[in-house]
Structure formats: C-alpha cells, structure tokens
Image (cartoon, rainbow, N blue to C red; front, side, top):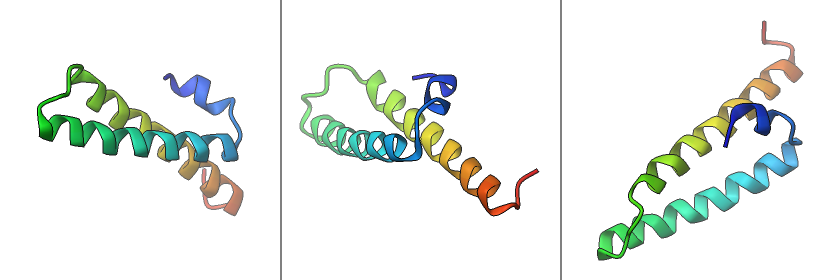
Length: 69
C-alpha cells in the first residue's frame, strides 16, 4: 500500500484499515509461533502499512490542531 493511496482516504477509512491490519498482525504472530506461517514477508509489510497509516493520521491531527508546519 502506497502512502499516496492512503492520503486519498478519509480518517474513518484509515482507522478502519488500521483495525484490520492490527487483527492481521495478531493472526500472523500466532501463525509464526505455531510454525504455520508461509509468507514471512507479510509480517514486515503489515507492520510498515500500520506505520504509514499512523504517520498520515498523525500529520493530519497536527495540521488540524495548528501545530504543524
């Protein structure tokens, strides 16, 4: 997921996406612990997508509060 795609979404859509990714991350952790995880690169992808969404939401909150540049 690219940051440019995420910036087009609303805050509500980003929050929903964040919830889904959090659940996926949880499931991937369990799969890894039980030895059932096939796509190990997906863990890294999910973590980075979560970070991208949190960064964009943080930027929007700072801009809305007037403390951003």
